[in-house]
Image 1 (cartoon, one colour):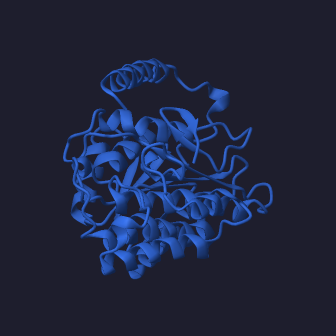
Image 2 (cartoon, rainbow, N blue to C red):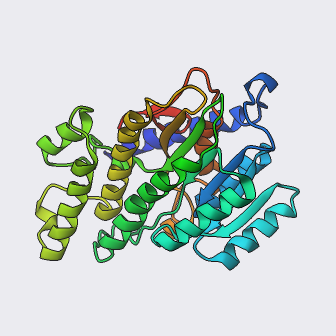
Length: 316
């Protein structure tokens, strides 16, 4: 993209953010508020950044929000600050990479709240900023962003509460993980086709893709294998999350009325948080907005298996 193209893109982004800012001022009509103070939302990675802001905004809309974070002390501190604002929040330790921690968290949620209505998978890591594209921590990035998200979904689904409005799962993802992204696409055309075809998409395909990448990282051959060239490990982890989101739609589709679970993902944008070394171009408040908007969408028509950014649907 040339200088003029970048300028136009920036102008469009600023205009869209201004439009969203105005939309946020419009209160939800009572008939669209399918949630209540009894609606329980779990947000992972919630002690800071996007996760914290999603938790804050959901609580601001009147939901009961559990801030889950790897560091229990930081999670309690974040929750205490929100309670001082009059918000209904709780906190609990959760390491999405530790099966025992996840099991302990599930038992606690069931014991104290009887289950949950909403799961927001926000816990994630990225070790590259600016023009860096190191894969030194690729295994940790894939494990946290993809395997951690997958483990949370599989573990939490059994304790999601029945609801006429449907339970909700939201995966925080990135446009960097789009299969056919204009600037960061997967070079292997056969793999692209398989990832985009529902009849080819499988957990084995997704797991095999990330395993192949990790193997090539260890061999030192990944750079010439057609993987995304911007933040490669992070982009691939989000590509896997996006694909898994679509796969889960198929698995959840047969659930009966009253036990439906809707799952979507969204890109918050390039946000000024610790993950981007504060180099983003929007605030955490702006970045969290679309995620909160997706979670609170009306139950009819059912919205599931979609990818969103800036309050608009985008392609996978």
